[in-house]
Image (cartoon, rainbow, N blue to C red; front, top):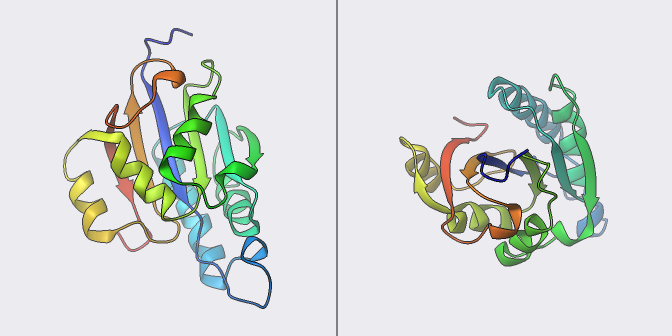
Length: 172
């Protein structure tokens, strides 16, 4: 696969979490979160994207979000549970993405706010249609995702290098 082929990044925030008396990392999904994760999975399936790789935070709520969402996809990609995605800043998320092998053309990253929303804003040098307007007006609520494209190697991904091509939130 040529690095000249466009790459796609889907930034997916975990679904709504519950607040039991456990550490933040161990928080499970709330009932609504379980429902929204499956709906988000169906919306991801509707995009027609066949993911080559999923990078998922090790937090319980992100793992459970991905398990429910991926069940809705026609193809289950290789999933890597990455500790560095938990509480990561946009810069830390870019560093993880820069390590992605170039044979992965379409990657979904399942993470947390404010990092995921910040990353979508930082990467999107351009936007198609009303995707940026919708993302800016809605923010990045639980179970939302943004679809971005860029050209080049994963090592070259940097602020402003991508185009925001789609955005979805459970309340859309």
